[in-house]
Length: 333
Image (tube, rainbow, N blue to C red; front, side, top):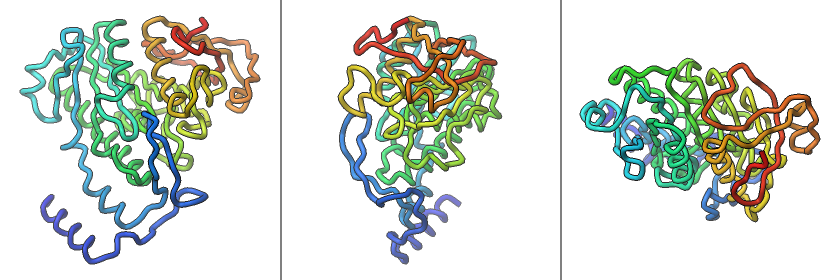
């Protein structure tokens, strides 16, 4: 069936012009320049063409995604896991008695991205965990936003299937999971939780992506997990502006971070703050009336709350503003 589908796609793609415009999902010009998380500039296409449909159909995250396991026994060199490969799992350091943290990178990133290199050691210092880094770089490498956004959704569904298989093989349960995603990975973390019936105890979106997600029904949602939290550090450019989770934190108003001189740096601050919150527990936010008040820095609500960390604040909700330092330690307490 797979071979037949591949043959049909090749026939159709060769018989039809692939630049036929199917839909324009974004207002404004078709092309615009965008920075990746490393600060590199790329010209991206915001419209959906027939060729994009063929590219989306070719992406198969069930076969191309790789899951890298890190534990305290192997904190720097991963052990790869693949769905339906029980032998790799039994030979690994995976322990079904531990909690499992799943990390999902963003656009044009991979398992070796800064997001993972910052978060993984922080997690293993804080607790004896299974840390699984999702490498969906094949799907994340598209320069057409409609393609990479759809790949984000398809990869999220595949990650959910991987977790289901892993639990069946190991005896682990969803109650042991925390899913953390950055950028496009932030929305993907929500997709994973949604496809696990919203039963994951803790899902964190770190500056979930903006372009193509304002009206996207697959974006991060407050009910994707039992507790959902979002940290906004570059809204309106890389990151989503409005609140998405049960609790949303807007450090420094959510767009421009002290000590940064680029949008890429602002976007990356979300995972630096998360890493510090895991090891130190800092970052106290003040309650806001809504996200408008947060971006304007006008918050004086009676409640305070801690941002990030490894313990879900189940049952809590609201929007919070806080200030950070320009350099580590970023927390002001």
